[in-house]
Length: 101
Image 1 (cartoon, one colour):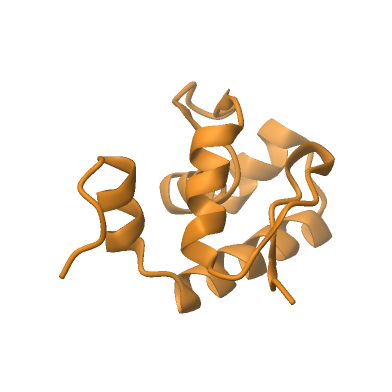
Image 2: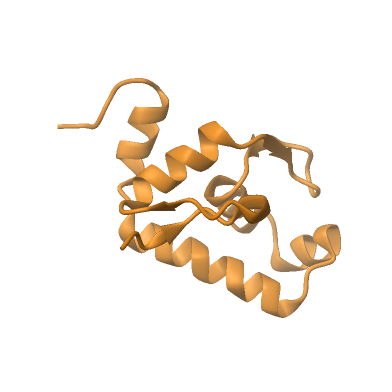
């Protein structure tokens, strides 16, 4: 049974590999604008990574009116993906280079 669910705007599509999930989110969903700095980026993992790598938790909470539970949930998603994903493969696939050898 696929482990990774998209969950963007109710999308329940599931994937065996987390890399396939990230590719799906980056290519099949609209890009979003960061409410803190205005950067436009893919929704899902890349948006979460941007928010927590580029901005403080306080900035995120203020910009998105997020609760501490929502912040923790997104931090856990980011951690789970980063613990399991080959981000270099994702980048290569998004750039059209295929997986790295």
